[in-house]
Image: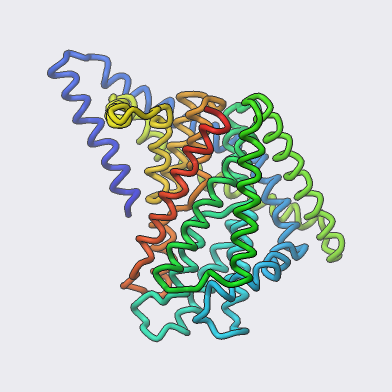
Length: 410
């Protein structure tokens, strides 16, 4: 519903601004430019979707091997001591714990198709434990915030779009996204724990969060000691080595489990093909709306206004052009994806703005969509502090993305 209003707003605002430019400034080119943008944006959307087919098929095929090879279950076992402390209201050994583990692990691996059904199953099980059926329980909210903070180890979709739009090194945003999404998730956990009075000052949580924080601090310190060229080389090299290692580990895991690796890959690859085809109408719709909005001059007015505010405070405003992706992300995943693609198309996939828009896209998840789908599936009306915690986690991710973007590419 939110995306519906946003899409309508794009056209209405563009039309009004076009009329103003035509009537008061005699700009006879504005409406032809808007119409040209509808055709060019439609063509771009189709070409991108078609080009995604091969890469999406590859990665979803690899992910299916990992899923059947037990990698997701392995993640669940590793995360078990941590999650039992984040969800103290869930009885020990309750089946919902397994669904939560599986959902989070699937999200971390980028297994969207597996994550959503597992998440809905977890919400149904959490609702059975919920004493107030129309009000979100503490475990529900913590679960939702972990989803909306968007912790992802492998940002496959972002790298795929970068490859399709001609990035020289599509994986160069791998480490920056990992850092930004870590801060978003960490903020979400701390904020929600404060609301729910969950004690994070215990051995397991301090060791986990402290260890991860030290590791991230070490990564940031190490990269800060390098110049931009070396930083880019090391980041890209580490990303490629890690991704190749993950593929190899998935294949080996499948072999150990005596899975038909080839058949598993083909099964996942079919999902990749259908996914690429399924997103065509959505990508066409959002890119046409954004294209008209930009051609009318509305996007430039929005960005100029933000730049004036930022420059008034004496700050560097290079990040402003990428900010529409960040602002759209909590509202709509497809809308933010369209903003990211539009930004890379306009400024270049390897520009600072293009890369930063990718970091924004990968640093958080679609807060309002997730809340609507997951809470809606169990008829929750009173969401309590879920929205506040989710949006604060998003804000932390956006701020972290800006700092990380400047550090790596600024």
